[in-house]
Length: 82
Image (cartoon, rainbow, N blue to C red; front, side, top):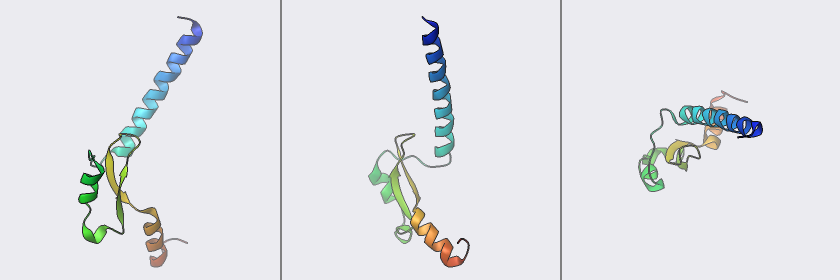
């Protein structure tokens, strides 16, 4: 292998390690569902306005998370943010 190839390989290994570290932290503590339907069915009726199922680009599964717009409006209403 040429020295340039080694440098590129080293960069790819570093990139992969950073990506794996990020994936572990961004999905930690969240339940992973195999399908959108499974994730969507777990949301209780009273939480429909506050939570949505979404596709995770890191683990390629589905998670349930809060809706940012709703959270912002609620915090503004409670006087906790500007």
